[in-house]
Image 1 (cartoon, rainbow, N blue to C red):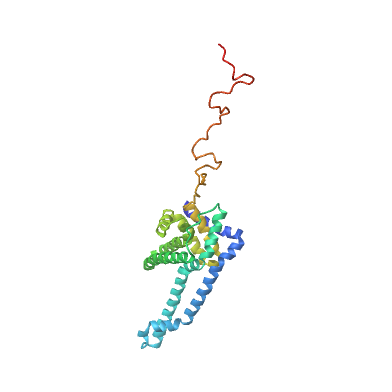
Image 2 (image 1 turned 60 degrees about the horizontal axis):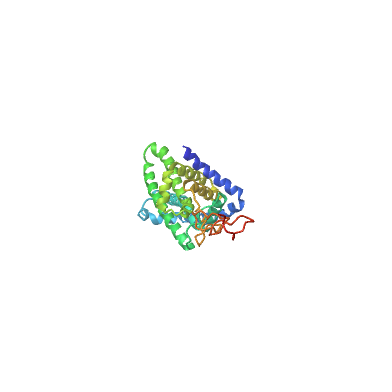
Length: 296
């Protein structure tokens, strides 16, 4: 339970971070607003043409009595709109992260900088980053969809389907949401998607605590847009916890193999200073005649 609480703490810490950096909060809301407008437009079209979609999907009911036909098609239309809404919820974060890749990468880097610095990440073109992000998002969505189908079928089990399954659904959705949001900071640490998922599974309560809290937050209207920048910041803080960044030690040796003081190769003691450099022996004492014959 301690790790679960820590995951929730990272969620709140991320929201506090963007609250202290208002400019970055507004900056991070731009992709979510763009995605929200697009999704609202698509859902509006879906609602408008739900009847036509239902008629197209049920040609076998053309010869039915009007009451039965209309009832069936209303149910199909409602189901189509409901599936569209569910799909929007499941894909909103992935699409927002894809659209806002440059935005959220900058936000994540700023969080890393404010917390002591982070890895620079691989130097790859933007199109390459977008392609990798899209590929990884699709893979995560497919995994989430597979779990979703199983949970949907389990929902028909009496009692369990109405109590345990919804809780498991929030936890599963939360884990994969955490996987999406931590993708950028963990990828900068050189971790592949399989390695990222394995790392998150090793800290499963923390990943579920962070993601489940965010899933419940996203159920509040408009909260998805408002909380998205803080979610990215919190996911970066979580990534720093489970995969700490260790900056490489500063190189003290220059190109000539000398240390910073130019005293010779690193690891060797500098030669001791000899105040009497006469190779033929000690200098004669002051006042004595070096050319006099030695006393017998």
